[in-house]
Length: 283
Image (cartoon, rainbow, N blue to C red; front, side, top):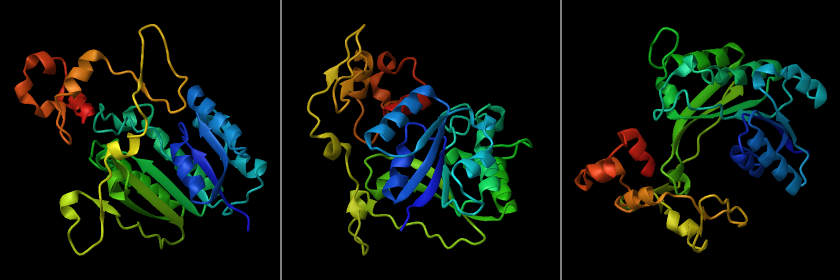
């Protein structure tokens, strides 16, 4: 049986693409604007001897109809159209400029491609800040509402959920919005969580405790230091420590599961120059 066909938009370095391939899809093409990300994508394609075409381009300049011709896919034959558009304009850690940020409208490029290709399924990944992003009328949630309406206008039925990575065995407290839209009807069901905080693992449901980062990186060994003026990238595991000494001192004061802004007892000397948003990056 031939593998299901997919198209990757805003591919980045290919993290989402790895999961799509593991789910059994063939990725016909990966579209990405950043040259360094494209170099990474091409290296992966070459290493794994895949037939994916890597396209370095501004997505706004591409005609989705050309993909139908090049890959001989008629409307409705593409199994999956997926991507994670730039999130900076919607991130709660940023300025939240929404559509006023030049990257904000890129969210709707997936609609433009879907209108032409009519894939069976659309998968979108975004920061949860998209749910509250303001639109042209300065109303909270307007951008996401517009996105859903545009999906429905071309025949798709969307479902969405905020998913915590740690709930599925990933050692990261990372929440992301996932939208799954299918053409005509939607029988998709989001999977049940498999992991939970240790205190919540004694109930009726058999959940595994959250996986800590130590369990994942314990076999790496000591990292190689980054020496001023030199770049060390020759390790296969990429375990290079680039943390400045001052930040190392700050991080050492943060208990597991907390963040720097909460350590008010440390004084201005360590906290100086850090806003609450920046200090949360040490979480």
